[in-house]
Image (cartoon, rainbow, N blue to C red; front, side, top):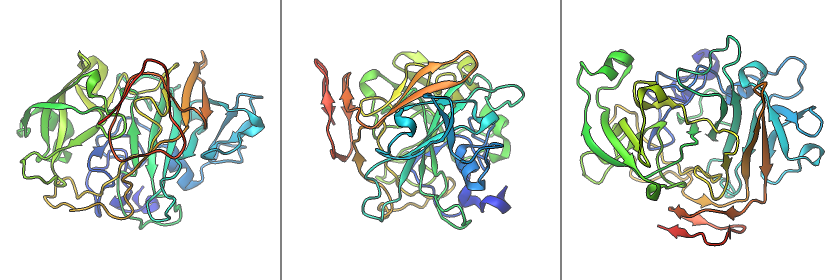
Length: 372
């Protein structure tokens, strides 16, 4: 795929090594045509389809789904606060691999200055239908979501920055506690599984987090190698990354039966898909806000960037976007509801980061937002 997509700078969804820089401190797994060994699904993503202008036979749009109003195909590539087709904000996503259905929303305010790279949230329905085999072991059917950072020029093969798609997981984002941090020896089972592709500098650690450690805006999650200052010198270098060994969240320890491989969550778990009743919004974890970005060196490099670049996003822009999974149908189709005016925070929340309020927040009765 490199001759069509570009060099190593077009790896994403498990990027492996880079030839320029990665867009986040962490190395985030996921799926794409150029996903590396730590991919979570055996599938391309909707960004890939847009890049190649792959359209479902008979379709007029590269990003489309069905309107729940009349089951007709509509374009589902939205700017924040766009009018909805037929005035209806509910959409039916069929299996992505079979039909190419997807939904994309540009997150507001991120690139208002014309310098910071924009971000979009993508929504896809992966069912593992028929002989598609896109769902890896122990992955579950449902909505899979990720955020695109830049990489919007579909005509170039030279734009810098790998890991331009950042997976979201229904498990949410946390501040983790690390124990038993160690570098895997040559005979370690993770080396046996990944072979020579696994960087020998990557550390492993058991991690724990509780409900009090939820950090929706700036926390880390299970589908990434975590970034950390492993040598306590006040610097996070490109190779200072941690592979989650045993993961315990809110008292639940992930087992091999719940993970794609052994108990390493980075390649996916049974709980990463968004299911009926799940929502992404201002008061949920994960939220509908943009991500912090920070360019980082190659995963094998000891170099680092002292400061963010001017194209990095360093603001958490609150907004009224919500994406709710309202129906998982018997045939595998999934209905989602999109709103631009959902400002409700209806449970206790802990918010961290440089937060910008451009619209409003509605904290419902008896709940508390902790600003940390």
